Length: 72
Image (cartoon, rainbow, N blue to C red; front, side, top):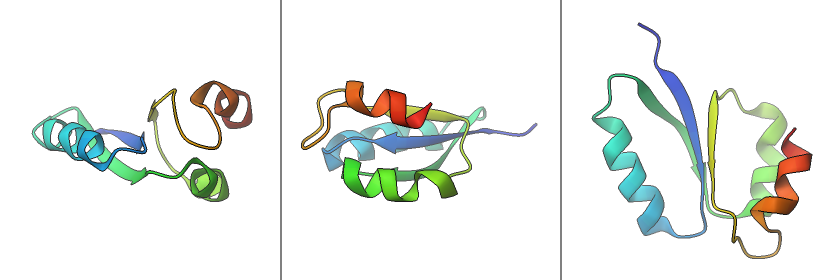
């Protein structure tokens, strides 16, 4: 079975680490990458090969709500 690739975008490393810890035990999901800076995320967005984005809606500089149209 192919695992779904999840990318984590949250400015709090402790949150990303906690979610990674949970997903690493999963037989369904795998962590494809992570970023804490939304500006850097935008720079790498076109290169991502991921199925799911877990997005913090209250990010510094650019809110998650502002990112959604750019991601689509």
